[in-house]
Length: 79
Image (cartoon, rainbow, N blue to C red):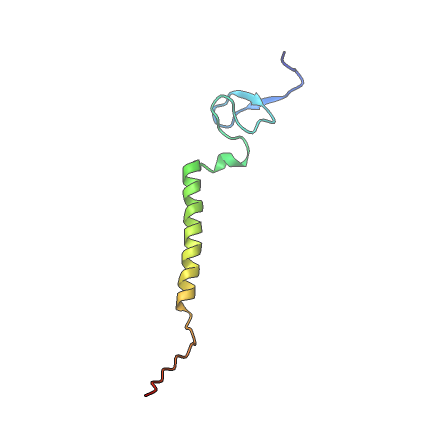
């Protein structure tokens, strides 16, 4: 049973008729909202997140290694 009150529109990619409130086309699988402008695959997105995580840790390690420690070591030999 199809409800005639539901409005339809054309998909932005394949031009097939879809429901007007659909976030993803049932025919071609393309997003219909703001995500259609960004063509990121999930593997690329996960690699970017991993790179940012590693880069953040690397920067903190480098910054901590450049700080001069003001520790004084005194050695005395007693006969």
